[in-house]
Image 1 (cartoon, rainbow, N blue to C red):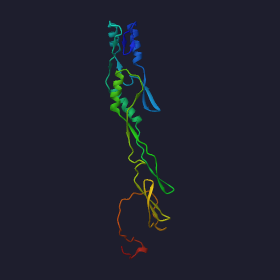
Image 2: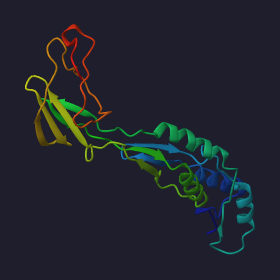
Image 3: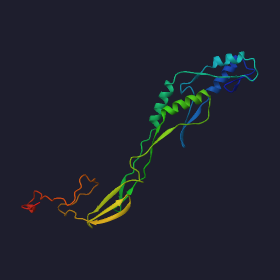
Image 4: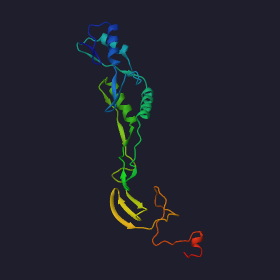
Length: 220
């Protein structure tokens, strides 16, 4: 009835007991990265080694039926830290921000997607504890969610200029708030197409004549 880390070794020779404990300890278990992504690892891959010989020697000396002998681990955390660092780079996902598109000259915001980062420090200590307890259940890796800087829920205000109808349409997100009549460029000096940001805003601004024949002698 004597056990080593849950492995029954009663009635076995020392060599048989060591082999049985090694098999039980070296079992792999899944690291769960997402609902559709997991990978199996062994304790050795995570840098954990068991002091099997020491535990079996203690089991051979046991005189109490049903004695439970602990299986201690050895090895530093360097291998596990490097493993998690590499896994963090592989599983890192940058957030995808919501982008502005014009559909039939109305603003539409694409769906944003949050990013994620592996909590390497938390994963390190939780995995070390699971290995010490000889747990082999699926281990869900902890992640931080990284929100996008711009989401479709709070995109702010948008101005759409319709050149042909000479309209300025003010949207709050995708909701039309106001329509203004505006002046747009002539065919020889057209208002340029594109996406722009307002960098200067003036009330009743001055107009300065350009260096052109048609504006010669014009006053500001």
